Amino acid sequence: MTMRWRLLAICSAENWQVVESAMTNWSMEVTWCATVQKARRRLRRGNYGLVFCEGRLSDGTYKDVIQLLGPKLGQTRVIVLSDVHKEDCFDEAIKMGVFDLIPASFNRTDVQWIFMHAIQGHPRRQTIPEVISANATSLPTWSRR
View 1 (cartoon, rainbow, N blue to C red):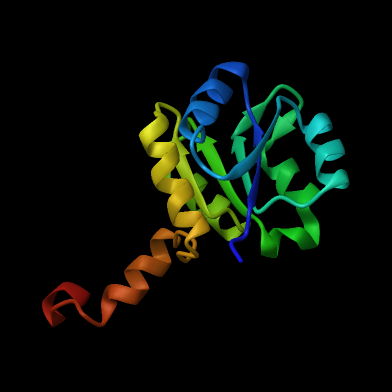
View 2: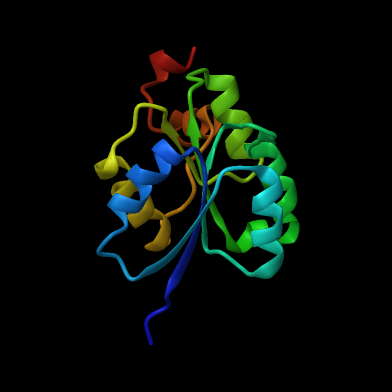
């Protein structure tokens, strides 16, 4: 039996149009809201396998959405639309349980690619120190000094 994914998009109407067009031919229930408050109501009513969330919303941030998910975070892939391109912001989001981040200048192909990875069970993105640590043993000895 194929699992039908449920996506909650918490974003502006403009970004919603991109997400909705990217998901047009996917067998996925897609729901939209624009605020943390409305997301709270949606999340109380049901479980979502995917949450697409803008980094900053009119009444909060993706961090508020992470808190709303609470114990459901383990079963939910959260993808954050971020206009911040700093390593420490990226690492902080990943450590909080975010699956991945998409740069603010995204398009429908970006959305499809990241959602495909999320629903296929790929592991979450790693923090910069995790990547460095995982690759440290394969580096030449001169580069580890």
